[in-house]
Length: 85
Image (cartoon, rainbow, N blue to C red; front, side, top):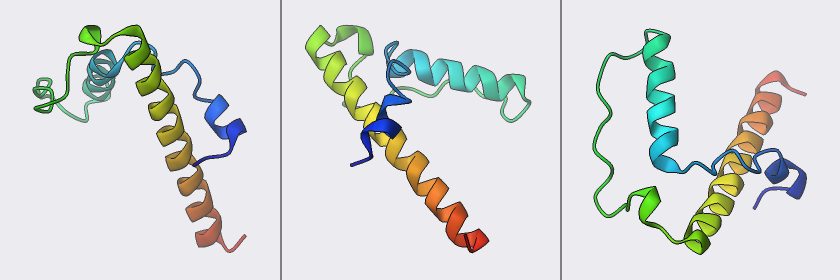
């Protein structure tokens, strides 16, 4: 689990769902010239965001916020460890 203040920084960042997020990230990478591919198919077994109930979307939003905060914290701690701080 991540500290509540770290999770709070991600509140609302995932409300559009994973389908929109994937498309936005791909478009940003295309704009930066990193990739020139098309959006890959959604992973089998992962439903379209717009098919989820409001309760399911809220639960997944919280999970994504926690995950993002955990990864962010891991990166920060790794950077501090590498720098010797």
